[in-house]
Length: 102
Image 1: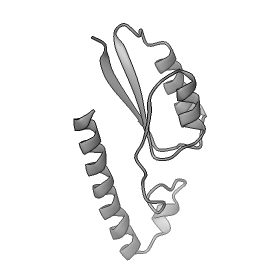
Image 2: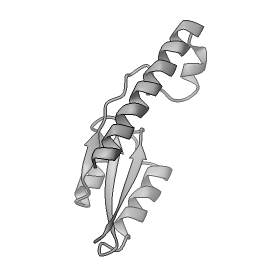
Image 3: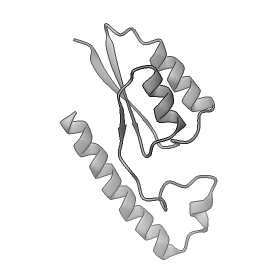
């Protein structure tokens, strides 16, 4: 029975270096040994590309204030940083529960 491997990527609308590398890795996994699954935060180019490989894609939405890049979160107020921290804890619990079910 093939082993499941979950690939997690939050940059759902990107398909550059890291995402391309992950795609190439998944595309070349021996299917008799591994069963890849993609986990991301929203529909986008990433999900579409992995579905082209017939890889199951699961979406676990994350609040928009958490899914930011380019040091934007560093400019948040202390209050908003606390909210982001709580959102991250809740998100990670969702991912943990999903992993246990799957």
